[in-house]
Amino acid sequence: MIINYLTIKDIQVLAGVSKSKATSIVREMNNELKEEGFIAISGKAPIQLVREKFPYCDLSDEKIRELKEITV
Image (cartoon, rainbow, N blue to C red; front, side, top):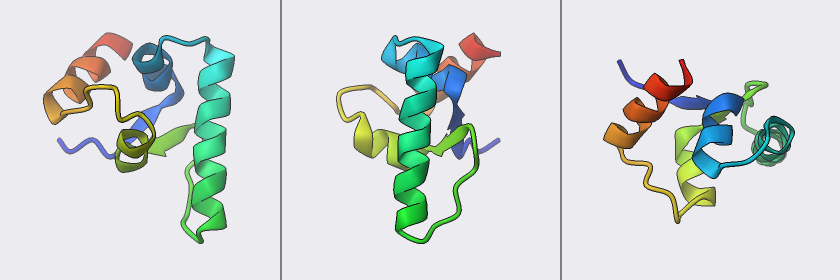
């Protein structure tokens, strides 16, 4: 299964922040997408954008699968 989006909970674990901070991060990324004319899904952020915004985190496909197992 291809994973295209990360949820607020995923961002929370990835960045080690509170739920409210993760929510504001996702909201900010979605606002950027909307400004560029893309469709944004509330509560989710595209993995490509997260990889761009969090270059210091290991977001390889394997790590994302592990992250999804943790947050389920």
